Amino acid sequence: MRNAIAGAALCLAFASSQAVAADASAGKLLFDRHCAECHAPGFGHPGTQQLGWTRGAERAVLEQRKDLAAAYVSAIVRNGLVEMPGFRPTEISNANLKVLAEYVAGAGKKRGSR
Ligand code: HEC
Image 1 (cartoon, rainbow, N blue to C red):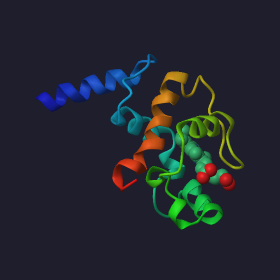
Image 2: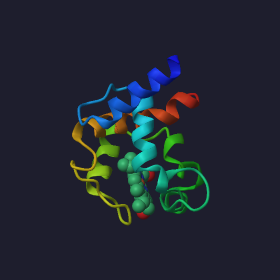
Image 3: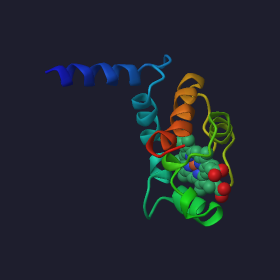
Image 4: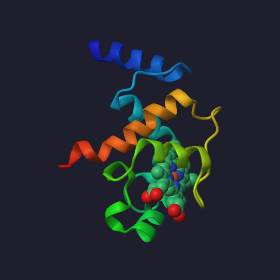
């Protein structure tokens, strides 16, 4: 019951165009919705594949990177990069981009030692 309520609250927060709380779970939701198709680990994801070729295998998976700054991630998301399309503010709001970029910049750092 408690989980159902928490889940509903999360869905509401996600559906709203307002800034969502800057926590990792909101960032992860945004990543899964907009980025995972190309940047999830494993074969068949063009972003992961391309980064593996151009940056090296240890830099292929975005969520495991320790070398990405939030400002860099935001710039790439807005402008795109080679085959990666840019995302407009109508697709990812500025507030959500901030949450997403902080998530991507921090995700790999939390997992391993710095
Ligand atoms: C349609 C596929 C696609 C989607 C969707 C996509 N990307 Fe990418 N992304 C790529 C590709 C391909 C590259 C590699 C570009 C290159 O050749 O350098 C890339 C590169 C990047 C880089 C540069 C990493 C580096 O080492 O310089 C960042 C950061 C990034 N993507 C973040 C994101 C984020 C965050 C999202 C979600 C909002 C996202 N991407 C969505 C395909 C995608």
